[in-house]
Length: 46
Image (cartoon, rainbow, N blue to C red):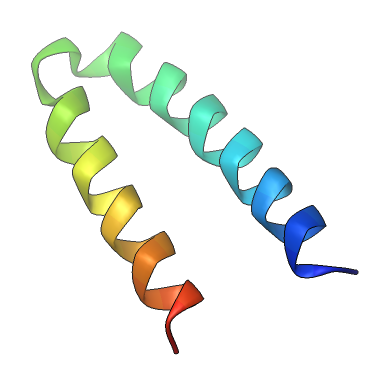
């Protein structure tokens, strides 16, 4: 798969997880999103 395809899949999975997590922990979604962004950023710049 191309990098772009992997990125789209990662975004979709992240959005799905964020939605599920937000339903359980409404106040913590921003922290989760920040962590997810950091992971993607590190992965892209390995």
